[in-house]
Length: 433
Image: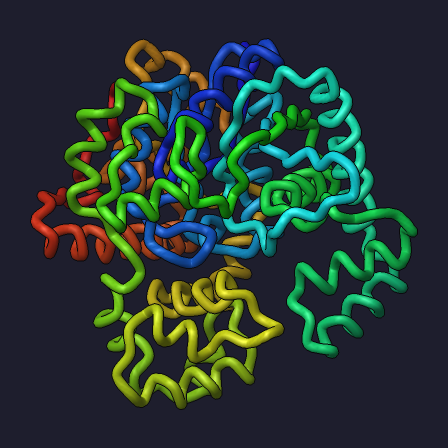
């Protein structure tokens, strides 16, 4: 049996995601799809708009056979560590091929972009005779860039450092250094999904896996586009949810209308976490804040000062944002403090050769045998029935998994305040859809 792996956030699941699953499965000839999905907090450093079980159910209704939660240490990390965690997990699960989305750029036009924020993709069929050629060309560029960044030549590191010292953001400094050393248009490096695609390929090189990759072209709405429509981006859909806009239903599969009608009544946004964030940072010294993942000493000092006054999540990110740090980076810093993800704990999560744990959120009905097969052969502990399966974890892995459990508990607390019934994660049964 050939297994296809797709990393995603499904924040929320939409028509483009359903297309991606169908297209990737048909193109690779794989029998089953394992979706490795971010939990209740996502790579841009914010809470997901709806809960992980609703998003998992949406995926299982539309082509995924098993949905497994990407551990929070990877799910809320930088593009490099997000991809590294996903590739390591897929290798542990025995996946044959992974599929990711890419933006195919015609000519030399540079699309607006920044650091890759997640694995969301919105695809449409293209009738263009050039689509296959564009996909092939961009895929080759991505793989070449991945090989280059996997090696990280000394000249590249020097130019990158120079760019960062001049105040450029990391994505901009990286693109400038790559262009200078390779003498070619590097506009393909500026788009979110391409940046993440490079990280997937780079991780496969560095980890020495036998995984194959199957890129699928993203055509139509861009990652940051806010236009409504059949293939609206997840960014646009979240904006419509927040604004109570009409036209949402055309952006997602019809079989999700009932699920989303309920879930969209109580969305979660960053400012819903302002009070708990205030409690987490107020009164902390710069030295205490500097222990958390992704935060520099300078940002820790600025955060310690800024948190002396009342704030919302949004106002605090704006106060901390500067030219050399993207908004996503600032959000990620705050998310890591909120969830207690320290640099030391993140290193302990990344150190082992295999993923410390993988939590199964749900399966499609009829895939029980597949789940059993994967559980018996996986190189990482598969958590299906938490109360029972957590006992098999090493003390180190169990301690790390507590961070995931705490993240879910915090998200559930916010949902409960909005009138959403919640269950205790340790005793909750996995979905069968």
